[in-house]
Image 1 (cartoon, helix red, strand yellow):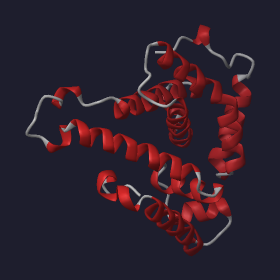
Image 2: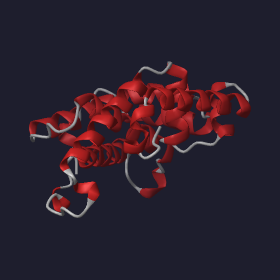
Image 3: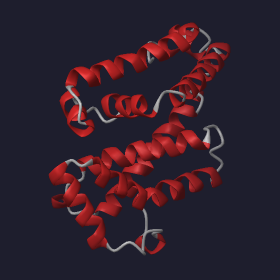
Amino acid sequence: MHSDSRSPLEHVPTEIQMHLWGGYRRSGDRRLRDRLVVIFAPIVHHIVREASAAGADLCDLEDLVSAGLEAMIRAIDHYDPDRGDTLERYLWARVHDGVRDELARCAPPAATAGAGTDGGADPARMSARSEARLRFRHAFRQLPERERHVAVMRHVEGLSLREIGGMLGVTESRVCQIDARARRELRVTLADDEALLGGAA
C-alpha cells in the first residue's frame, strides 16, 4: 500500500480534491472529472515508473499509462467516502491494480508454455496475437478524439448510452452512431487480425 509520506500530491489540499469530487458526483460534469484526473495524474506516472524500474519491460510505457488513467477514471466514478479511504489512497490502490492487470496481459503465459497440445500456448500464435494487440492499440489511437472517448466510456467505464449522451450533450442515438462508426473503422483497419483478436474490434 502506498505511503502518504511519498505522495506526489502534497501541494494539492485535500479540501480542493474533495470539493472537485463532490461537484463531479453531484453534477456529472466531465470537466470536473478531467480536473481531478490532471491533479491525480502523478499517481499514474509514479506507479508506472516503479513498475519500469522493477524490470517490467514487456509492456509499452504508453499502454501502462493508459491502463492507469482508465483505472483512475473508473475509481473516481466509484469512490465512496463512507467506506473510510481518502480519495487519494483509493486512487492509489485502484491505479496500482490497473497497471498490474496490464502487466499481466503483457506477460507471456509461462504456466502453459510447455503444453504443446494447447493451441493457445503455441509460441508462434502467441507472438502473432501480441503483434495483433499492438496493431489494435495503434489503430485505436488513430481514431478521432470523440470516438475514442465514447469507446472508453462505453466499453471501459461501462456507461450507458443515456449517461454518455448526457455528458456529451447528444442523443442516445447519436452516441450509438459514434460508437458504431469507431467499431466499424477498427474492423476495417484490423480485418486481417479479427481471428487473433477474438472480435475485440
